[in-house]
Image 1 (cartoon, one colour):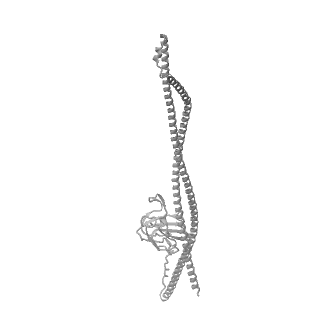
Image 2: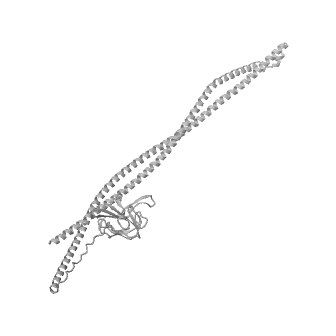
Length: 461
């Protein structure tokens, strides 16, 4: 095998290895980014769950506070009822004291009534023994003298008055006795009835309070359960955040590796361009030398055949063309520049727009803004269908993002050239019309949190 063939075979092997390695790295990067999206989705779900638990705890707490207020109100009513019961019991005790005091009066009345009854019974027996009722006229007519008549008349009046008084007092005392007994018994019955009502009310309030306390226990148990579930979700969220952070580190490491491969590929491309340029310059120099030798030979022949002539002016060689100074990026599509980089509000409050929007019809061609390797190609949340390309420009890693695509024409790990078609404009993801959302990042793509720059400073819009 000749030396040139050996070098060509080695170069081909090197290029094959360089093409395989970025593909494998990009596949791993895409897998890591997919895992990161899943972790972020899980984190979002956990946040939603935590918010729901917090809302449930808040509602539960409000219900608990409402019931506690009702219990407090019941406590007030119970205390008021207990005070009324105590007051009634005090009145009952006073009434009982009054009854005890009345007992002596009643006993005295009963004694007097009994004595009068005995007296009346004695009078009745005397009248019965005398053969009938006493004839007061006979008593008066039996007087021996006027004085005796006066005495007998006075005695009869006294007896009659005594009988009337006895009968009147007997009737009055019996009525008073009945009234006193009825009054005391009625008052006591009313008080006992009121006490019974209050005791029943207190029993009802105690029952309500017991039920409320039961509800409080249930709500407190529910609060504890919700708090425990919320704590578990928060722990899972912290673990998810840790996983996401770890994935970000892995993604950063993979992007660094991919960027290094892109840098080496760019160096190789520049080396090839330099070699091609050197070969072209060498060939041009050799052609110029041959032309000069031929011109010299022709001049010598002419000189020998004719008179001497003025020396010919050397051929003019224009200076080598210098590349125009640029950012290294081109506009990835055609259309209207509709949204700038920076803070904006599209109806959901202020948000930071980390790229620019270029609007056109669905299917408009999307091109790679610079040479590089496809590090992501697929769906990604609000980006919709998105392509991320990693570049190495002048030794600096860059990343470009092409979002809301209707179709994707490249795959992860694929090497793309500046201006190469990579997809078509669309309206996927969080989009409000057909357009391309285009981002430029100085450094590897990390979600745009720290290194997104204004594309308007790099491309012509």
